[in-house]
Length: 119
Image (cartoon, rainbow, N blue to C red; front, side, top):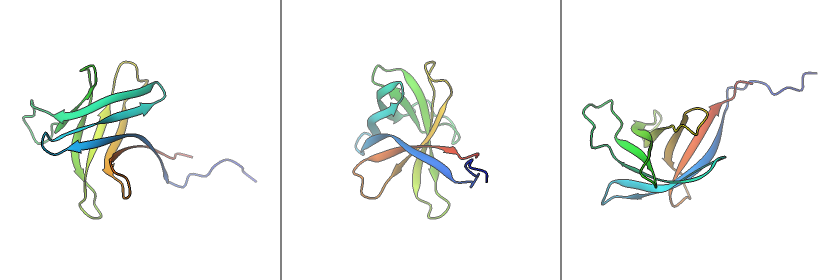
């Protein structure tokens, strides 16, 4: 009998942060929690956006360093809006891809990271 996990195609997910939304400023403020520690961060409107393909938001650490970008996406099932983030920094071993979503029962938006289960 093979005891190794089987590839079910299921995606493993983890919450790696939470953000509150300020509608008056159209910004998100919160934190990203990774192994290297907690990063206070903000998503601010991208004032250099010139095309629809450019990110709508820039992700900035509390010290002002730009650590990523966010694009508006919509779920296929119900057209629900969410933000797709790409986070990167020289201290990261690889870019982090995550989605900022509303989760039922949670007061803030949750930053969900996922990695496909390749078995």
